[in-house]
Image 1 (tube, rainbow, N blue to C red):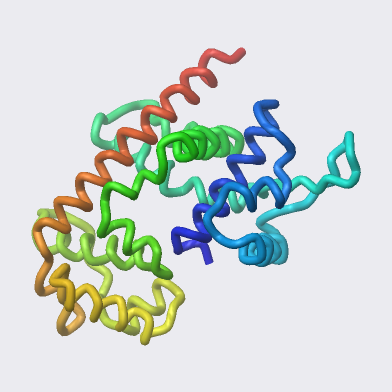
Image 2: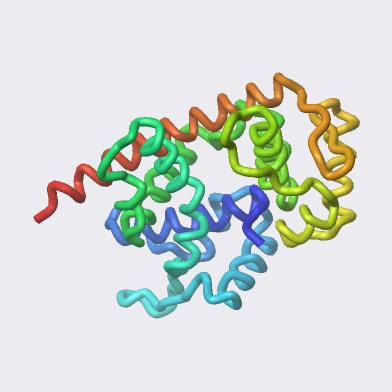
Amino acid sequence: MLNQSGRYLLSFMLIHNDYRHRRGDGPQPTLTALQAMVGSSARQTAAFVATLKAARLVTVEADPNDARLRCLRATPPLVAEIGRPGRLFVAAMDRLTRRRPSRAAMLDDFDRLGELIYRSGAHILQHGMLTEPFTRIFSFTARDCGYPLLAAIVGAHYAATVPDAPAALPLSLRALADRFGVSRAHVGNLLQEADAAGWFRTEDRRLTQLDPTLLDEFEHWAACQIVFYDDLAAAICTGAAASP
C-alpha cells in the first residue's frame, strides 16, 4: 500500500504535520492542511486517508480548543513503516563507520523516529523531493513497488559480484510478485519497460544485464540518503543523549 511515491509522500507529510503540531510549530494537522501540501487531488487524498484510517494507521482526534477541527494522528505502525527507510540508511552509516552505540538503535524510539520524519519533511517542503535529481530512481518510485523491484535488481548484481554478499531474491515473475504483493502482470510490465529502456534485463530467474550508469545513479542516490538521514539523526540523538 505504501510502496508508491505518491502514497508514501502523503503518509510522510501526514506524519510531518502531526509532529510539527506536537512541537507547537504549526497548525492543526487536519485533512484540509494535508490536502494543501500534496500533489494528489483533494478527493484522492481524502480517499487514501480513509484507507489509512480503516487500516488503523491513522486516528482522528477532535481539537481540544475547537471540536469542529479533526486532527490526523499517525499511529506507531505508520511511523515505523514510513520511517523504516531513513532508519536503515542511518544503520548503514553505523555499519560503515563501526559506530557504537549505534544511532539507528536510538531511532527504535517511536518519538525520535517521528522527529526524523518531521525534519526530513521540513527539508522536502523547502527544497523538494530528494529523489528528483535522480530521474530513473524517481521513475521507479512512481510505480507500485517499483523501487523495491529496483532494489532487488541491484541486490542481484551485488550477490553476483560482491564476495559474501547475501543471496539474491529469485527474479522470476512469481517470486517478485509474491515478495512485493503485486500481480505477475505488473512485475512483467516493469521488467519489460526496463528492458526496452536498456536499464536492465532478467532471464531464467536471474539478472543478465545492468546498465552501469543506472548502478552509478542508484549508488550515488543511496550515498546521499545515508548522509542526509545520518545528519538528521545526529541532531536528534545528540539532543536525546543530553536530556536528563
